[in-house]
Image 1: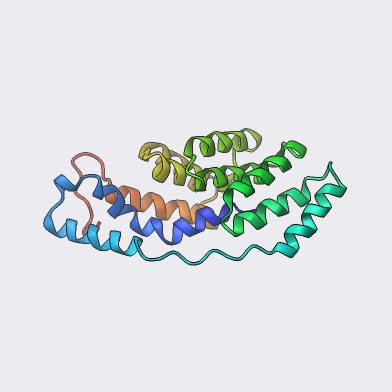
Image 2 (image 1 turned 180 degrees about the horizontal axis):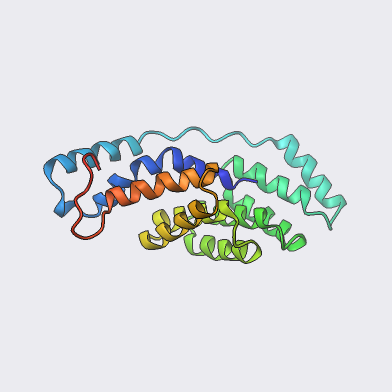
Length: 204
């Protein structure tokens, strides 16, 4: 599955920038020191992204042949979705994940991978709708909950919704990699956006 791609990429990079992102929306209330810190974070986020992996055409051809031979099998379609996702060709990933789900509609992992692909094509509402499908299949699917928080925070600026999803992930599995990623995200969110009357932590 490819749900980790969004979760851990953002956990490793954007979670470190969430304070600057949130506080950047409140520039009028920032001190000069806070503005400088936010500017430094923005500069870091503007660094060139790594080059996308090259699509393995040989594997694409092989899996397409397998899909043509067996019109009832979801497996080669999932693999094609994964290949296109890894190559950051998300439109094609959506096509193949959708085809796989028609054949295996109860596959929660593929459903969530499809939702992540929607997010990467700037369709956060479709992503969240697909995550709802995943959670109907498995309300405790922790990778889905982690991704719901990410899309709500970064795609919809719904900080309360992000907090709720991340807290669910932490409650379900606090020691798992997903639970730990959710905790880091939630800690950063609360540090950068404290309750009314609470002072932000130094360096937030």
